[in-house]
Image (cartoon, rainbow, N blue to C red):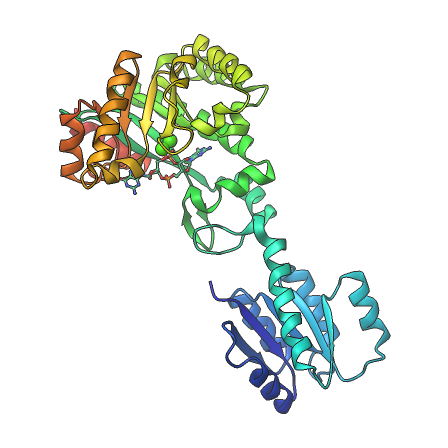
Length: 390
Ligand code: C2E
Ligand code: CA
Ligand code: CA
């Protein structure tokens, strides 16, 4: 996303001069000649840096500054004024209320440097808040609200038998129905949830809701359907995980072996010894365990023997290459053979084309998941698909 600097000054000459100073820079300059208009700009787009003239007739710079600090705390605030002995401004700079004070007449180099530093500061402040995919920003309180306001929902993607197209399971995939940004995908908010410690309550909600949904489908006659749920590292390491899963199994009365827990290689490779114990405890409950995104992490086949797992989900980046790269198909065939020897089930993820499906079938891959058969679906769509599939 292009960086945005908002210049607010009531004097056209000053605005023009400022604009000229920033001509040729690779960020967007927006100008505004009063505080009210500036607030309107802030409400409509992300502004990284604001430069506010102190002496303005309609809304003073100090008033605007206070409003920006309150309502747009992420925007980096710079203040510009002709008076160099403005004590309150100096105090404000010292207290971090304002990042920098730019005295008029401007020193062009100082101005450029101040804006560059502001961008840096903005990036550091907001690293955790940046929704990776499209650079939109959300705050902790929005996430907190999302839980309370039931804005999370689950999509279900079918897992099918490669030969017959029969649906044997579903993977629960989290979505966030954001009030203004629309339907958000996990890549846009999951790592933020992790950072802020929300992944435990959200993950627990996913587990419980997905299991309740599975029960509903079982009751509708789709008896052997499985439900795969993603577990984050923090969930996997949580001391109450076993208790929680036991609770959910008792509550929903689904057979434990219909619940499949997906973890990435990296999640279980750290602290191997204790993780093996945790995996074993999950197995003892009767749940099935999958390694997710296999082929992207350590990809060490030797550890497969040590871990009490049931399924390998081969990552989509692998699958996407199988029709173009003969080496990949050779590796895939090796993985499948080894998996068979170890009694592991293989699921190929991200199958998008018929050619990929054919290659997978040729190599005895039994189960697939991917857009070729179906994208992740809402609960209603999945229920509908089940009735036509069986
Ligand atoms: P994942 O576990 O590897 O899930 C599969 C992802 O691949 C899903 O993305 C799915 O929509 C996408 N996908 C499926 N078929 C295809 C295909 O044919 N082509 C392509 N290009 N993509 C395909 P999604 O739903 O955006 O989820 C992304 C990741 O977010 C998941 O990757 C998982 O790691 C994480 N995630 C999702 N839900 C949860 C959750 O409830 N808890 C945790 N901890 N992580 C979750
Ligand atoms: Ca997964
Ligand atoms: Ca995966």
